[in-house]
Length: 225
Image (cartoon, rainbow, N blue to C red):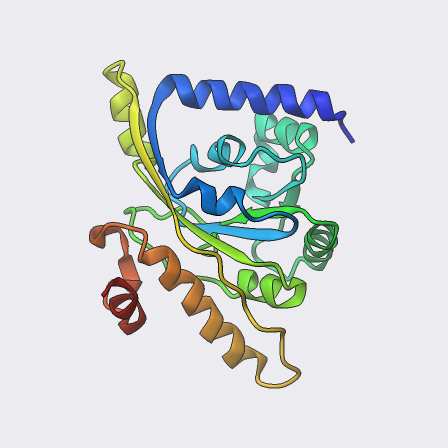
């Protein structure tokens, strides 16, 4: 376990890099900052800059993040996971150890940042959500804070940097909401329903061309009226 000051130094360096290489507009940040204690912040996932923004958005020492197992082969990723006390996640199996640890940290009042899509979108459009986040919310009772990212696509960011420009990024937060406790029966139906709600809340914060499979969802249409 690394010291609090070591983590703050690394996080500060990440934030400094983001501030110096991007022009970032943030809307509704107060909705995130107003939630104290345990919470789950959910967003779309566009590019490799996305995880870094967590440290710019949340001024907390109890941030919870999971990192896909494929990055174990990347030395800088291994180092950051260790230094920042992040968690590895095996995506292609039920990773009970990581799930239990996430729930334990949530129970202690931590805030989890996660993308329900489970991977980066290759064309920037929202992918179908996985049920893991709905499960964690139902088990923990943590409120969900939806937010969206626009402009962090790897291709777009690299194009701006090659021209010695700053990437233009927009982040928007929605209102917190909760998921009911996990029922004893019909759990698959329950998780599908609430996963859709989570993804719809993210979709409403995105421009239409980013909404992907949720662009025509009736719930999106109702929430945008």
